[in-house]
Length: 426
Ligand code: ZN
Image (cartoon, rainbow, N blue to C red; front, top):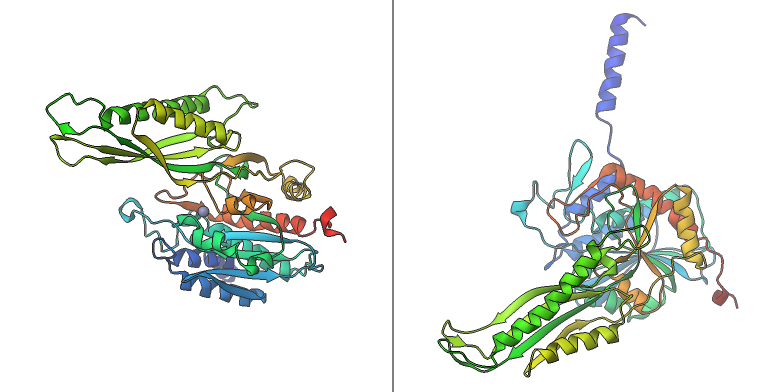
């Protein structure tokens, strides 16, 4: 080759390197980020159409189940070689929370990718990444000719971000859900800023309460006795005093054995305060709303007694009104006795992944599954990533996203090959 030709050849090489095409899975991820499945009016039709197209590409059957008017669950199924065995369910929700566009550095729904591979968009972490990773992992496993013992279902549910009442909760009441014959489920987790991956095996119970304080009314110029405000003051002191104690407990010196996370303590936050009509009238009522999250280690009866005592001590005419009160304290086993955990952790060990097991600090659809007795782990394979769910400028790096697909391939392969359990043998 003479010099002239070599230069041309080298040049061609450089050019082809520069226009390196994007992985199809990343393109799919960015496409799903552009679907405006944002609360309060998510484009669920767009999501269903997208998922139907994916099922077509995977050549797998796809069921669209209306669980509530305008609310559909999509189920894509890969049947196992022994369909009588309990299945592995890969669950994700299709909706996302709203954004404050002025606080974003780009449009949260354009699927923007930066030169360093960071992909920005609402849902990059919570949880459209996982939704696509499931699909791509199944695509790769299927195209490599793999076959598994257990049936694998991918379930895509609406409305998780507004409590899942017309999503997972309604779905679980239907025969379509029973027909899944669920043995074990994976659902969302959280990013981990370190090298490690977090696995969630339980959740805190959210209690949302109004504390209503009533008292004597009168002119704003006098010392009225027994006012709603005095009672409110006592209520606030008790609840927020407890908040301080729990905060201190979380922040107390951490040793590897006592290391506490948000999932290990009770959080209390005053979120709404209402009352009063006019500047010069002592009002009859104040209403304080608290968002309380209680870890599974807390005795709920004892905790309720404690709260009732605070309210009693605040004086007459003070009462609690429950807006939501979850009481499921079921945990999914993360010890070697569980065949599901053995399969999950074996796959992770094989990839030298460091796992941290925790209680989820907030609530996900997993709580419905665990409450019904199904084992379920919350896991999103995003290490070395700041936790940005529901935050401005939510992003995930392309490399982490692609690694996550491989991680799921290994985990799914192990889970779908778990030997028949005691109760599955006739
Ligand atoms: Zn989520």
